[in-house]
Image 1 (cartoon, helix red, strand yellow):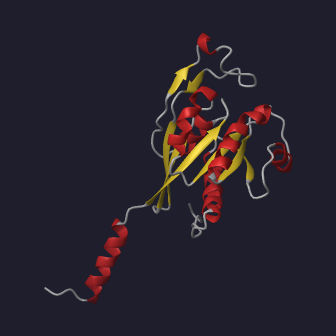
Image 2 (spheres, rainbow, N blue to C red):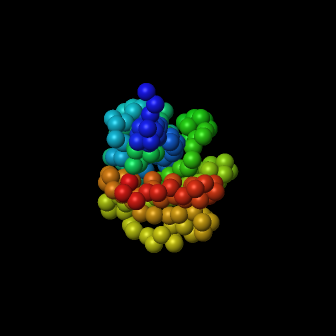
Length: 208
C-alpha cells in the first residue's frame, strides 16, 4: 500500500521522536571539601555513582581539613551523575577528586568535556587555583561557582573574580550545592558560556 501525505508526515514525526538526545560532558572541579560530591548528588536524576572513602589517620598531614573539619569522607576516583534538559540534551557530570595526589586522573576525566564548573569556598579560596589554572591551560571554558556555606563570609563577586585573577569573560556566580534549582542554574550558565566560547549554536534552555 502506498503511503499518503499524512502517513509520510507521521513517519517524519516518529523519526524525530526516536532521535537520541545529544550527550554533553561536564566536569565539576574544585578543592578538597568544596561540595563537588554534594552538587552531583543534588542535580543527578539517577542515583549518582560515588567513590567516597572514610578519612583515616593516614590522611593526617596529607589532606588539609582546615575550614572543613567536619568532613569525614573523601572522593578517591570521581563522582558521576546525569541530568536531562528538555529531552534533547543529556548532561553527564563528572566530579573530580580534590586532593593533589589524585590530580593524575584529571586528564582522563576532562577529555571531551564541553566545559567545567569550578566550585569555590571563600574560606579556602586558594584551593580552587589549581582547577582554574588547569582549565585555562587546556583552553576548556569554565565558570566559577562560589558555594555558599553557612557561617562563611560573603564577598562581592567582583572581589572574588579579582582574587582569582580571572578574565572578565569568565562567569562567576553564587550557588548552593544542596539546592536543585541553584545547581541547575549553574549548569545552564556553564553550557551557554561554553557554547558561546566554542562558537556553537546557542542552546535553548527556557523551561529546562
